[in-house]
Amino acid sequence: MKVGITGGIGSGKSTVCRLFAERGIAVYDSDHEAKRLMAGPLRRAIEDRFGTSIYRDEVLDRRALARVVFNDPQALADLNALVHPAVRTDFEAWAARQEGPYVILESAILYESGFDDAVDRVLAVLAPMAVRIERTCRRDDASVEEVRRRIAAQMSDDELAARADDTMVNIKMEDLEAEVSLLDRKYRADAIRNKA
Image 1 (cartoon, rainbow, N blue to C red):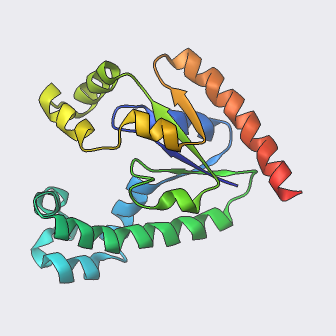
Image 2 (cartoon, rainbow, N blue to C red):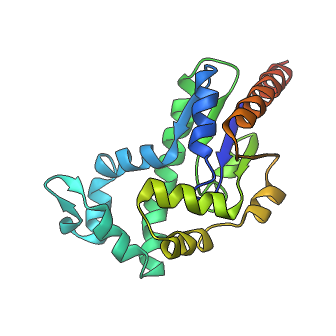
């Protein structure tokens, strides 16, 4: 069984994924794996579309790429058309190699990328706006205005909650651990039922 975990910036989805991993569940971090693919197998296609200067000293200049794609909707669509199918193929191959009752696909843009149809269930990690802003400002050393702009560009918590199979509100760690434990038991039982 495949479970997608998504949530907006500062929601704490990576913390939730870490708690599942501590319970022995394999987690595929789509953002991390996209970076790996862009540095390797996708490099030639990215250079063909965005120019060889997008890599500096053999490393993708993510800031330069971001400047291009976030000011040009067609460039962003072209990048997504390269990266999303590659990540999906990589995830499916990775999932087939894993042991255990279920695996997790962590993706901030699960719905936007179409990855929701690559998983059996979706868990949306939500958090109050003030908490998300405070966490992101501290983590990224960013201004409140910058974080608000990033949040505004993402799917709202209301829409995530409406579309997801399960939701979890991430405010306090002790509550989070109990919720992850409950969902882990539920997903294990669902995976066994689905196999039968």
